[in-house]
Each structure stands twice: as C-alpha cells, then as structure tokens.
Image (cartoon, rainbow, N blue to C red; front, top):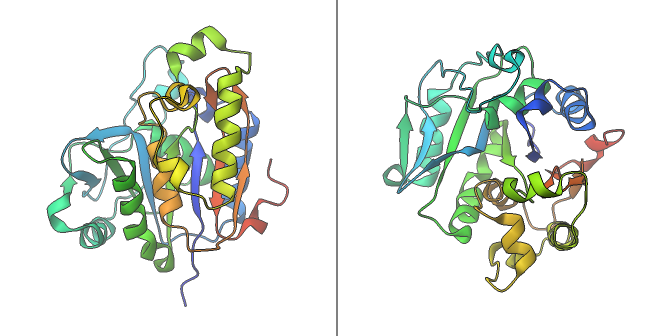
Length: 266
C-alpha cells in the first residue's frame, strides 16, 4: 500500500541558498533523508507564471533553467537532470480538468523547482513535474486547485510549493538585516492562520491591510503556499520550520502531514 506523502511549502529565498551552507539548505537536506521516498514530485513554482491555463511539464526530460542573473558561475553550472513524468502530468490534467491544463514542453525546471529539490534529492533520480501559476485565477482559485490535487498525496506524490510568504525584493534591498514591523506583523498573522487551519484570512487580503500588501506584493511567491494548504485534510497536523525573516523576505516553511518528521530539523 502506498504511503500518504506529506506536502511541503518551502521558502526558497535567493538562488544562493542552493550553494550556501545555511540552516535552510541543511533543513532541505535533512528532509530528503527522513521523508518517505516519493514515487514522483510535483513542484508548484513561483517562477513560472502563465495566463488562462495551468501549465505542467509534459516531457520526459525537462531542461534545467537558470532564471537569474549576476550570481556565481557555480550556480549556472548546476544541472538537475531528474526525469519528467508524462504520466503524472496527464494525471494532473485529469484532476484539474483537461480544458484548464496545458502540457508544456517549452519550459523546464526553473530555480524555484530544482533549487529546493536538489538539496533534498541530489541524485535527481525521482521523476519530477513542475507546475505554473495561472495568474488569471484569484487566491481562492489557486487554493481550489490545491484541493483538487490532494489525491496525489495518496499516490506517493510529494507536492512542494516553492516561494516565500513575505517577499518584496524592492523593500528587501532597503531593509536587509532588519525586521520591519509590518513584516513581523504579517508573518505572525499568517503563521497563526496556517497553524489554526484558518484559511479565510490567507485567501482574502484586504487592500487596506498595509502589512499584507507589502508582504505579498506581486503575489507569485505567496500563491504556492495556497496549493499546499489546499491539499490539507481537515484537522491534519501542520508545522512550521525555517521560520526566519530578513528585511522583506521570510524563509518560513510548512509541512502538512507527519510533523514528527521535523524532529531535529530547524
């Protein structure tokens, strides 16, 4: 019998996290050792935005994309040659609706995908599919897609949302090394809502809520969180880890499922 997989939201931060011996990378490495081995991995990535349909990798051998500039050559030398899974892509289309999904052979694994999975599974031997964010959907629409994807967890698929709860690069450059009041406020409220299984405040961010508007900003890094929360069963255990904040960037990560797996992981 296939074991039900946890679901993860991973705050991925800068591409440098992949090659820096910091607490977040160490947490990802430790997760790869304690998680049940997945049959396949689905990554909802902040770095692939589409309009009108959700795109998923449909090819057998997706390419590695280095979607960043100005970083050390070591990052550009990384390749993550995990096999794709046309079978999983077809299953996703079946769950979400064939008319709402496009099987895509032109994208690949961007750093929102390989950047978090490579430290967990450096052998790149687990089939992987990346999924885009359809920006024609509102927050509730993204959450609903997560709900529709929940059966994959019972089929041995590790669902990973890759982004950041607090992500405002323009303000991060001004506030790096500090913890602004608005960021602390939004982190505290969002963390409390996640742990209380109170989805409403996470799906409806008021335009008058200054902290939320600054934290979520352009939203692409926030939305992957909603997919992971959408896969959660009522009353299912949920825990936070790597809950750090630097300026306008948080590395808060979430595990839904067997939270005992986090013992010893910071």
